[in-house]
Length: 57
Ligand SMILES: [Zn+2]
Image (cartoon, rainbow, N blue to C red; front, side, top):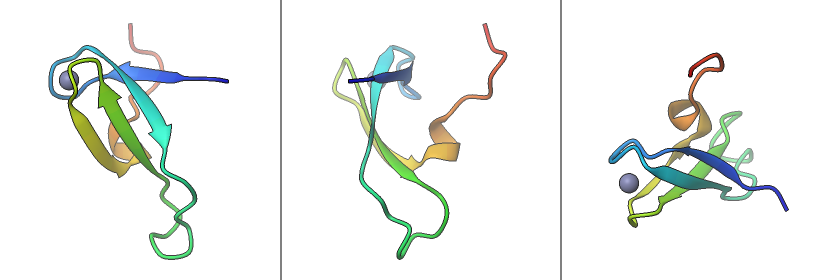
């Protein structure tokens, strides 16, 4: 099982990203994900908003 980790937009600590299932039928082509950081911050939105561009340190 693969777990994606990103920086929490709130505190910058590692956060777990989970896909919230297919939402193409109503939301459009943008995949929505759920982010849950180690401190309990929760975010939900388009993956493009939370995903950081490659090439960063
Ligand atoms: Zn956080």
